[in-house]
Length: 534
Ligand code: CA
Image 1 (cartoon, rainbow, N blue to C red):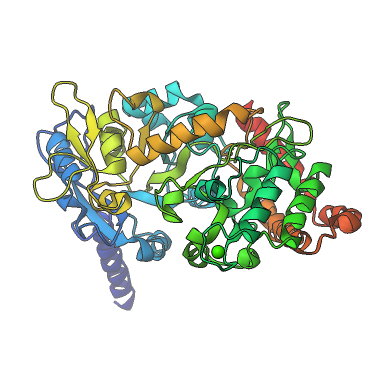
Image 2: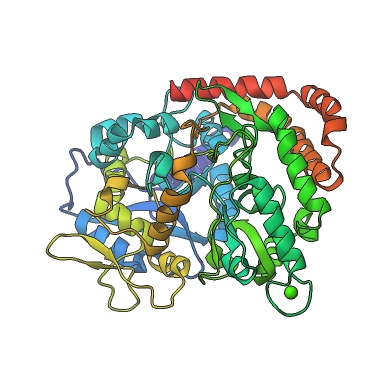
């Protein structure tokens, strides 16, 4: 009797567990609708369950967004969202993934290279390359047009585990991210002091000295900061003007030679000359004293005292006034003028959406996601939409041509307006869409024109380090090495700019880089590059 009760209880418990997993309305994922050869709109509406994240400015229920309402009408698929604000999302997502209570898919998933392989390995997310080939003509078209994106989303094991976000603005050496920060020089001060635009490093030094000593802002005080910068601060670092010295430099001290060799710039002979030049400026009092430790807010608070500074968009530091213009590329000791690209390529996020192993409607889900890669849809996903009668629109739809035209922002901040109405999910915007599917946003068009004039002609080497897909073992090794290597490299760079001892300490420095496994690092980076590019 006791035995039978025990068996019964076990059956009861199993029964309850089975019911919990069979896709009733409390389950985190949807039941199997047994749909094949799916065509939209479905004859009978079904529901998929997705997790996502949004800006706190956006509606709590994503279905209040016009883009999703139109998509539901078009597909006959209702999405039941679990939506979290950006600050809470990662923790909630990780909890759900750990509990096994998986939604059908995660949109705007924020999956890193490591996350993708880690959750693929334990079976939490599923490979999607067959779904792309069989059910996703829009995405397939993008990957056929740009095979490099297929390479960048294909894991070292040959599978694809995610749907990417791709935003091209220009491409090749004309892409908007070809460099990060631009050098902005105060031309009003040049005029005030009757100085010409500097063309080489010596002339730049003379101009900065004049900025410091001749009171160009005319207030009778020596309050000018000739060079505003955050040393080792990426877009705010002076690396962008050092391209004509040695091999130049960029934020991660990595360049790829024209022969495809991965090079660590911070161990090349010419690197010393860059440091010595910056040290000379520092000793003359031309570099902001706070350049080695300040945060972004401190940096921008001094904007109008800068003679020359570095950042992506001057609007964030000194506004859009014409007083600051791009400093033309300086001529180096060999008479050449050179710009070094930054690494990483185009606007690209590999892990923007994933499908979980709980999903029982793979074809349906794939076809729904493929709608997001329709060119008109992608454009709206990224920036926002048109025809909203309740709030400001990003676009108007030109009925005659079908083109989405950016409307004037009328004082609204572009990021805020976009976050309220876009969906930031997986999407692809190729450069050829501009002028056919959509217009360029004004801020992007302005920067692309500047790049074309001041930057692109001076890029002598077309190679850069792309978005390679590392294996879990590689990530582990890279992380171990870089923790010390990058910290040491950047610390010495800052010290040397201040104290000028790079030549004396150079051999010791190279030995330390060796001890920190620079050789293994270079080998790993080279292997990953070779399998991605070749
Ligand atoms: Ca002054």
